[in-house]
Every structure is written in structure tokens, then in C-alpha cells.
Image 1 (cartoon, helix red, strand yellow):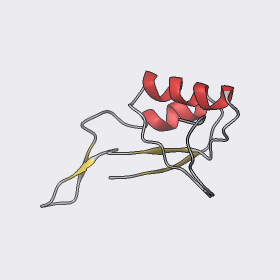
Image 2 (image 1 turned 135 degrees about the vertical axis):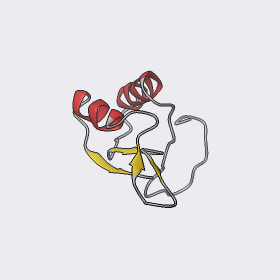
Image 3 (image 1 turned 90 degrees about the vertical axis):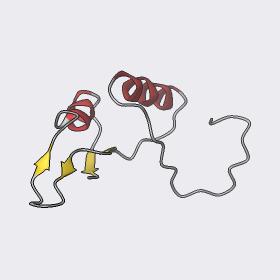
Length: 80
């Protein structure tokens, strides 16, 4: 992903990683090849009820924040 690919000039690349262990492995891989990580964004953090707007954390809550804290990375945001 970082070698042998003609990306051209990039300011930023967003990489969607699998949750949990896969995200940690991905972050470790980028650290090993010296690709800087800006931070962590949690995708699908909750489901908002279309009727009342109340969030339901069907996949658990704050998983990405915990990974960011454990790996000393910045938690940037969550996407609903």
C-alpha cells in the first residue's frame, strides 16, 4: 500500500480499517513504515433513531477512543 504505488502528490489519505484488532495492526504497520497517522475517526459510532433522534450504540461505544488512547494517537471525531 505504501511501496510500489504511484500515488502522486497527496496531502492526506484516509484509510478505513476494520474495527478493533485490525485497526491496531494497521496502525502498527503504518508506524513501522514511518507513515504518519493524523488520528482516529470512529465510523458508525451509533445509530440515531429517525423518529426521536436518540442514539443507540449498537456496536458498543468509544471503541475508537480507547484504541487511540492506548496507542497514544489523537481521537479526532466520530461519524454517525
